[in-house]
Image (tube, rainbow, N blue to C red):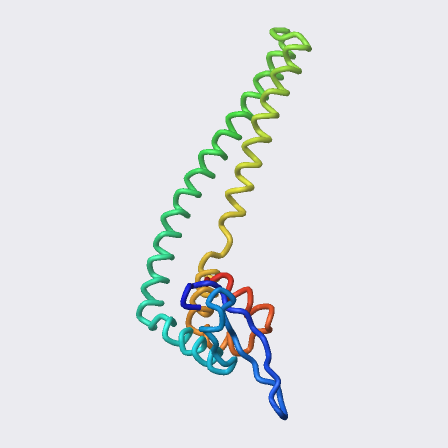
Length: 171
């Protein structure tokens, strides 16, 4: 409405059929618009909000550049984790060798191996999380661009539930 509150839908019964309207409950009947006009206006709004192709291309370029920068960082982090895991494997082997050589007793050996195993598990989990973040971001970006460039068609063919979700997302 004029007060920026959400509109409520209702139907009025005419002599032969019903007519849909939207109205504002806060504006006390001063704001009332036919269902068809509201839907047509909203579709026009969506068409006007659709970004031009050159903006979508620029968006893709910037998003992929950012992704590539992030990707380089992820590779660097994974390499550091792999190096640390290799170092822990070497350290574990040295503990076993010292145990066999009589330098460490059984309890010390067990404590050291457990400490190394816990650290290695933690690093492997972190490495797995980094791998999961490397999902095909280009396909995600392409999906976003497809959505933005076809938003009016997507709206026209959407179910009422998806239209409501879309409007909640916008407003």
